[in-house]
Length: 362
Image (cartoon, rainbow, N blue to C red; front, side, top):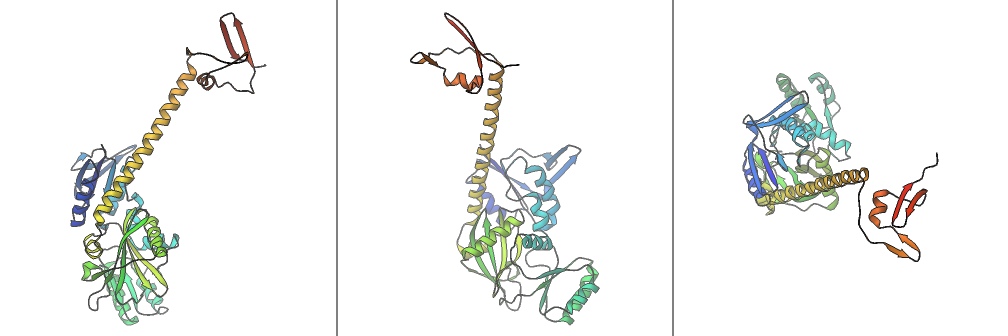
């Protein structure tokens, strides 16, 4: 029996994923992320759901918004040792922080807009003197296009910085890439882009995100861009992710990796059952992992048995094979005794008896 659990906030996309998983797994439990707890002390740790230790699963798909990043990361660090999880524990700290995502993409040689972070508003205002406008100001955390501010002049940017200083939050300054209010969401599962669509901003809103009122158009990405999308997801430690990018005159430039992407927009636009693709992939990876573990365990058991056999005298009844006046020992005997051509042996014989021992010269 192959058992799985989906830990989420219960969105429509999560419900679709849940139904898809039920088509492949023998049993699927649905756990609310809001009811999860992590408890650890010394060398013991456990993950709880409604104050009860959760069952053992072969696969756990845990996802949620940036507000739960620490809980998701802690939970996954404990659980990923015993089952398949498509999102690594480290992915939640990276993928839910725009700055850390940009750093991960940079280290993976994934192209992106020029990005800067500064420690103070005063330092940011000095930086503005060197920049070409318009620019984008972002908070490190936020989804659905929230926390993204457009500044078309240095005067506007300074006013925004003054307002941001009251919030006492770090912020990112990024070059503005003019794509006519269009961006691309590619859905990565494993080493494939299984669907992609172009999002178009509504009116004068620069945010093309569907949740911000944008519309979608299906798009086919070239093989090079698809490889970069997969590399971007892998850079944050995600087997399942939505990758956002801009198609600029410099080529594709990557913005974010979404660990909990919505399925409604991409499914409606492309006609691809993304939830089913997720369910099938989770099952395949889980079965492959179980097979590897079973094989490893079987090999370890065989080694233990062979070790035990080597240390215990055994009586073997078998026929003998003759070649002229020579007797060939059965393969099982040479395997258990580890006889070899380079060693010397002592023979003790009688009419119906033969004893062979390794002869070591002292």
